[in-house]
Image (cartoon, rainbow, N blue to C red; front, side):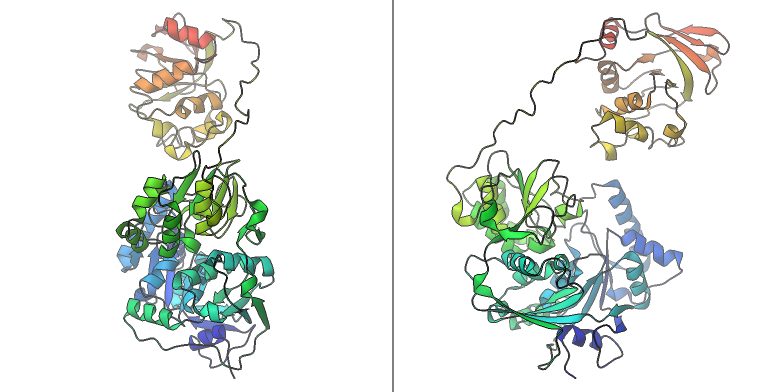
Length: 602
């Protein structure tokens, strides 16, 4: 019985000669990878279930989601995986290496006809070399690491042929966006697509990767492109192995067959929210943009970089627009350096990141903010996926051209003068409410005390840097002291009107205002310390948050949660439980003035 390409690959990795759609089989996995996203859970699943590795030579970590280690949780997961890898002898492609699915091709780990799994939903990118790739969850990956196999339901096969000539202005991204326009997000759902055609045969490896990488957005299991002689040659050079060619049987039975006119394909972009909402680029021509991004597993290849450089050479990114470029792998990054592309990018005003997934993984450069309009070469533009703004999808050429123009355009329609941003009036002076009268704020307060007898409590202990993006004061209180040992549960115990008494150098460290405002958010009335960090002291005074210093308060015989009274103007601290008082340093004239008018800016 003649088999389709996917059926032949799966049969070759099972104990069956023939497999049929819908049949569930166990298949041997040639390459078993886990990323920094999900990798720690793979390890925990192995440990918690007492499982060992089947074959360490086929097992890999790829740290591509957050190669900068800029997120505390990613950094912790990466280090956890590193420690496990050291113990077990697992090969790690660490934060300097690039996108894992690209690396298994680049390093010759995956070959035409092989099987690959990863915690990456775009592992089906392996269809670019005629291999089976599948993204899986951490339990699936852990099971495969332990057994070397994974169960899989044989998908239905679809044969898709692109007839005719490819238009000259059609990039690989345009090809897949045209396919998305035709099939949407679910017409190919759960199917394996084999892509054929005379001009499909001519696609380079980089172009094949772009097309295959968006099978997930089409709902397909994989887009398999039968390897050309050039692909076989590349894979043999990379792996050092002679590869037996694989192809679908001549009389293979397909679930459906489609023929599309390649010559009718047009330049397209996807509108924000849905990759399958792909339209003629002319429909959004001259849409003003704030930022642009070139990279991701879909378009971070060297050909993409060269195309962008060709457009950016001797040009500048439009004023006010930010263009970010991230090569897919370190090898590609180095080629960009050798070929002078990095110099072109930098002269054009581009931010170049180290190799990795970038914006789509929310772990590197590429994210956008609320209201921001971005054109990106990524594979997904779901709401919130690449930030809180709106993201259009396009080819590297269209993105580079748009970054220069300041609006969405094509390479042949870059204006001599870029579009400029116009004033919106959004930041006009707001109406000011009636100011509070001087003297309305209390200068004597009472509340329960928290005694924190520790010197040098720094701002990272008070309000950790992982929360620095928070600008709404109402959200800050919940994170107070969550990095201070023995006080991480402070917010659960604290009550409104509490007063804190601590030791020397409170608030040492950074200039972050949140380390003051978090106490205001919680309802803490004041902080007393033997001394304060210099910047912290200014921040507190300017925010009209009461801080005072003392020299010796041992005579008060204070106990945790005693009720106390503080007189800011006279400098008197009283323990209301025993009616004992001591003198402390009172407000200075400047502190009093700023406090009574409720802040420096009032």
